[in-house]
Length: 194
Image (cartoon, rainbow, N blue to C red; front, top):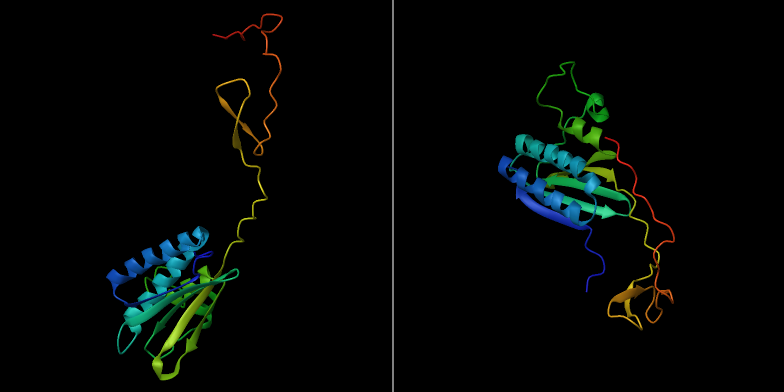
C-alpha cells in the first residue's frame, strides 16, 4: 500500500510544438494529483517557455527531459537538453522585463516570462552533455489535518423502526420521553404584502 504518492515525475520528449501541448496536460494532471492546483498556470506557462526555447535554439537535437519535483514547500520544474551552449541572459531578462522598448515584440521573452512567474530560476551547465534550465514555485501550505471528528454511527431506537444517529457506537442520541405536542396557541403565518 502506498501511503503518499510520489512527488517526482520526469518525461523525455522531442521538443516539437505538438509534444509541448501534451507535456502541458501531463504536468497539469500531476499537479492536480499532488493537490497543487494553485500552481498549474504558472508551472505550465514556465515549462511551455522552456520547451519553446529548446525547440527554437537547442542543437544538435531537440531531445530533452522535463522534471517536476516537490520537496517540502518548493516545486522545482526543470528542462534538460543536450545543447551545452548557455542562453544569453541580459539584466532585463533576468528581472522579467523586455530586452528592448518594443512592448509588442512576440518573441525573445521566454526566460523573462519564466522569471516573472517563478519564485527563482537558473541555468546549470552539464558540460558537454548539455544544460538544465529550472525554476521554482512556492507550494501552498497543505491543509490543516482534521482533528478526530466524531463519526455518526447508526443506532436503533428502543421504540421505533427508524434508525437515528449517535455520536459514538452504543451511545444513542437523547430521545424525548413524551412526544412533542401541538403549541398551546395558534401560530399565524406572516402576512404577504402584495
